[in-house]
Image 1 (tube, one colour):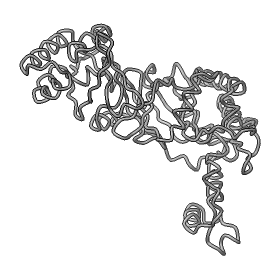
Image 2 (image 1 turned 60 degrees about the vertical axis):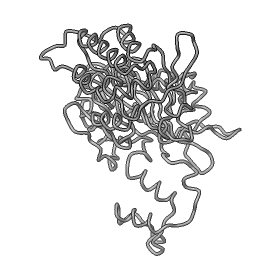
Image 3 (image 1 turned 180 degrees about the vertical axis):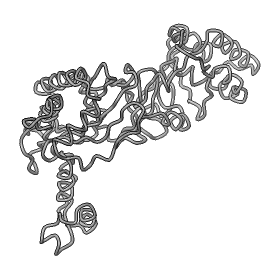
Image 4 (image 1 turned 30 degrees about the vertical axis):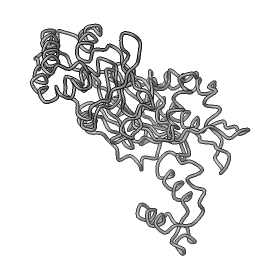
Length: 419
């Protein structure tokens, strides 16, 4: 994830804003245009000089000035676009709904390529839908990518991010329900869903925003990380057999060696036994500590001893952080056991995101693209062994063991300690 203070709205001098407002108004007067959309398009050709004015200035030492008050920035937006309110609906198709002083909404189209001046004004208006493909690519350069999330996120405004979503709205609907559930404080805050240029995005809380130089770990939860629908086809496949023997030539049974083919279910369960998912109900997907490259090659990390060692490395041997995480995860478990949402869904492929900066630590549930409502009449306890059709996912088994590993990681290594 990205530190919002590094890659969203920057700090500008008061004089810069005043000059930008004046020059924007001069441009509108020059073109004799009162339409926000037309003025923006015509001003694009001369906005490069304004970009120089608005470019962040590098300063040595501590930054003495904070961001200007939102009222100041909103005043800048009103001068730029003639409006102080704008929003994006999930069906807007890239259109901005601008509310005039008389309360009548009008629609205008966001230009495909926005100048820095226009982007600042859009940020000031709380318009956090992706403005252009260029913007997304530029902002992705600073993103902290962990396994399974490459290219999926982009920072939006201060404290918010965009996450790519799918048209099936499964994850959107999960977040909407979670905001009303006892688990609301255990997941990123969901703001709204956005459609732009044929793509779907979730606007959500940037969990890293209030951490300084954070370390981040992504932990995939559950003893089952695939949907039942993904393994319903029982036809044996040679391509999956070849993938399996490439990883472990000793894995096939005598029958599989003879047929040189395996089913999708067999392959998925083989993969889960390579990591700690099958035995412990969780696996470390990746982690990143400040100043180092992400560590992602952890698919074969299986033993509790190796996981404890990795966890101590991630925590930098901090007892304070470890105890905070144990308490946070115990609180999560209590809430899960009381949650109506959790009782009514199978939670597949979801992760727990752990963040700490050496002083403070937190953990949140993320990734709900495969979190589906249970069929009518079905019940799960999230700890029982999975058999096809019972919808058990082993999430609580994983959480129990994750808490246990964190507790064990704090013990002095000796003959009686598993870690």
